[in-house]
Image (cartoon, rainbow, N blue to C red; front, top):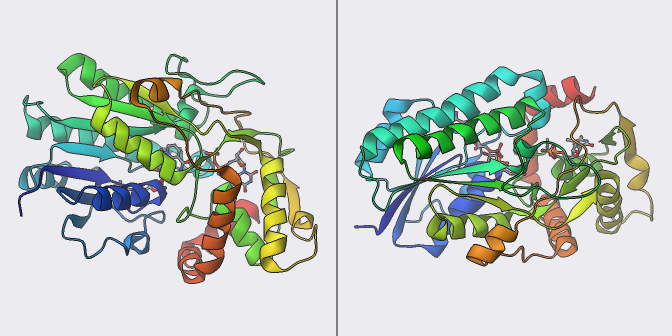
Length: 351
Ligand code: NAD
Ligand code: TYD
């Protein structure tokens, strides 16, 4: 079959990547979507059962650091668009093991750039390398304001430093080689299929399995939460209509103090688990703060709304409730991802 476009998505078996893969495979039957993923602890083919048999979807297990592999996929499949999401993505893990973040996020992105540049070989017509990044590259906000595309980079954690470094390299390829790139920097995502090391699925899983909810410091840190499908829609719009060389911020206009968010989650969980009011809140346990913990993130996405017409559509309370239902209903998914190494990770991190 001849496809209108051949798109390589990296990290498509992870939380956001699997949502983007499903979104693109279903919306564009005339595009071939090739998913390259190493299947680290965070990558899981169970996230993709809904597209497994689709004729416009292909999976390749492999490492973004393997340049000959990336080049051969790009050549053989005549890839004209790259959506680069593969990364190490958890701040806490970056604090204990920064080297791995430099390998995957910095050198991995460089390898992807080099592979695409070699294969496209100066013929950049209708080609695009789209690098998916995070708002954390901008650092930490005080009580007011929001990150815009002009906010100077000021990453504070090994994770955000590695993402910032990769963003700079992607931009340098545009500036130096006219290589066609676009970047987006998004706020915290939530939704189904998120690995339960991140706050929301960790809290749900702990309540479900009778463990306390660890809240770092005083729980006053603020994050701007966006439903993962809203992010996938933004990625689709930016991929198709974003201007090469540009950066677009993506955010939820939905700031929550960690403790307020967890209180809300606990109240919903009381109902779902048939417990008396306040039972889940009593599982909240304040623990030592994360090292270098960023205080507040908030994203100004007015450039994206003004230029491309994107808005966060999803209602937070409704989607949070649905997300909780999903984790409660998908017991075997949760059990599968928390078996094996997860117990060791949890024990080492939380004791
Ligand atoms: P994730 O950790 O859930 O998934 C990462 C995926 O990348 C996994 O499937 C993993 O197997 C794969 N991967 C890791 N190393 C690889 C390698 N060397 N080669 C091939 N595949 C590899 O991450 P996520 O939360 O879905 O985040 C996806 C992207 O979006 C990341 O680049 C992240 O920085 C960015 N982002 C995430 C958030 C968020 O809230 N989760 C917010 C903004 C931006
Ligand atoms: P996380 O989901 O790890 O995302 P990020 O660090 O990329 O924003 O954490 C979200 C917030 O929740 C952050 O302020 C750290 C805090 N947090 C806890 O209080 N306890 C936890 O067990 C975890 C994982 C996070």
